Image (cartoon, rainbow, N blue to C red):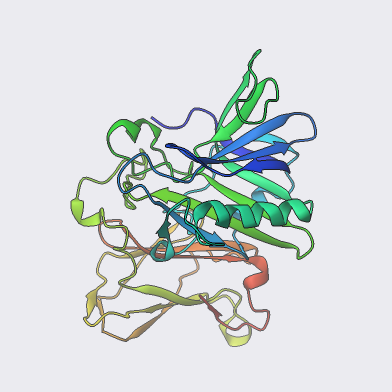
Length: 328
């Protein structure tokens, strides 16, 4: 199964409330120019460990921006939205747990989200909440902000890799998150959240955890890194896109059966047996393999079992104009 009404809700921030109590959510009241909505953001997990994993990117660049930036205000159903594993939204090794309420300034999850919400509100920017829509709830007032009818969006977190009673929420390309457009700096910021009880290697169709416990560790990424890419080759190299792979580990790694994917899921199998410790592999891509688009894209490295080892993203403005490599 998966989420019934997945999509993104775009609006302007009016008010917010910090998460409190046994099942705390950071609540955001927004206006879509027609209706009021509440965004309910989990800041504590109901499963153990209770601290939510979070990562904030204050300068977010990703191809998803080109998809959503011109949306009208309101809710937009999406068949293919955010995916923490396949979408290369961030480095999963950098997502960390944080309690929702700790004494002191700017040191808990409530305050981290509050800082961004205050910023987008002060700049009269836009918030895009990805998750599952609810409402409108006929003749029922919202229990936090009192507007009627109740209306909003929740599941603003990773929605795959769940076990037990939450497995029915699993799916691919339906993860939650918050994106903020900040008009004064013309930048985007992002908040991504996940639970420590979720696995980071899931089935390509169902989003359910893979059966092999070897891949349940969220930090089993990165034995080989995508170091750089030549996306816009010039001169004698024109038409010869290239990718550099780097082995940062202390041992040689067998690459037999490994592959590279682009944003459209085209696949190129590596024709190399091994990569020595500390070595760099320079791959010239055949013309009919994967495509590194000049308007932004994704590059993903899979091992022979199809497990994601590393992934990177880039936007149009990240690509060097001189025909130089883009270093990730």
